[in-house]
Length: 151
Image (cartoon, rainbow, N blue to C red; front, side, top):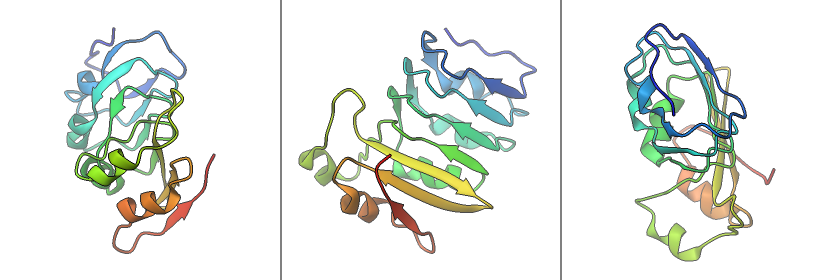
């Protein structure tokens, strides 16, 4: 289970699939700059608490299917991070009921969104298994290009 360590600056738990707990434990670490938990698919909870981390620069949540993302959180993180990867992470668009009603391919991977920030410009890559246009509609942000593809 994840527990906070006061002096952490860089967290790299890449592919530690057996780790459980919530990313909230990192919210109280004001000096943390990188959180890499790709492949930690048993982590649960929301990532909203990470918005308060002023020093956070890199957030890699690839294959963290148990984490809850929402559009407002993605937008807030996109403003400050230099790298954000949420590929194959469940994207629960709570304010977009049409997304849930339409459904999508869900074979354990679920619905996903890819976000990577390059040179300070957020680029959202949508991979929603055949619902690419729907995702573009959801993630279209002012002045931000949306590139669609399946990975």
